[in-house]
Image (cartoon, rainbow, N blue to C red; front, side, top):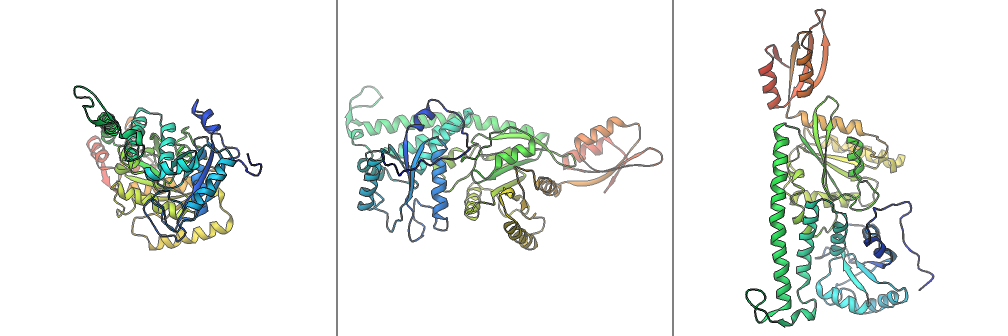
Length: 467
């Protein structure tokens, strides 16, 4: 083993304990390779060239560390032209094979999408297990999903990935097998059998997920009857969504400095400054080159985003690749069918203000001011916050309340002094914007409420004046 090789780690990071997977992963010496196109032109299977290569490699290393693998080294390998057989050129493959042998590396993570043939050929050349970005993300999701729905979605995505790996991947799958009845009749090859078994399992999981989807729909329908407006947190993985969720709701959702710390959706009640009750939903983080299998599998989970009245797009504004991450998130939202043109539906939250210096703060303030001046009517400017310190949270809550107010009506109401029950009821049903008492003790209220609550208020009180 070469003494010059330094183990890459994350100081102070404590990941959740998964046994026995963690013990196995900790013994697996891993090499992370970033095979990025040198001419920075988009190609199938690669992230567009505007993303910083060093930041991409750091992200790939973070993904690898997220499942406790022992990362020995990480390299950027510039590519001029991907090779169909091995992706990398023959000379580079031989050079990496020597490094892998000398440093006793057992796993190589390629930060790209490999074809089954490329994966097989690299494994033969490296004499080590090779996984690509898709396989690694699926492994992370498999380790982190904790609810039944999450586990089903991950399994469905993993089976879809495995099914694609059966195409010309392994020669032992080409042999024929006998059989009887309807199970693997004469002449059916092993690859056909495996494909059929995988497809059967995928069909069963899809049925189970439809049932989960119906249950989620019933829960959403019950919330709509109340109704509590839904606010959804979205953003790139590790942008600080769960930390902001905890700050806003005083919940204790897992919030770690690691990629994909949160997979299963979490919902909590959130009261806004004037008393409006809402539902805040934390969702799985997005990432560049997210496997298509996972986008399809998690579509049901992300329905909370599609149905949300307000979407908070949380950005790690201190990250050097923040603009590229922003583009990735907006693309996923568009693919989900979110109406991006609707004014004010999306509030951009610039998180991790505590990581910024004075110069960066001044620059971002100027950008926010320019965007506010050029914004469409009823569209709020970006809000600079720190989920860690609480900076900017009051401004964020005010912005959320302002956006929800666009669909609500303001009215005035006068109550008799002895109507304490009615006053308490109004605080439950509406936002009390202002309250004052006259010399006779009567209570004058300025209220804001949605259409359904307005109907209930008008039916209950006779002395009602439009505001």
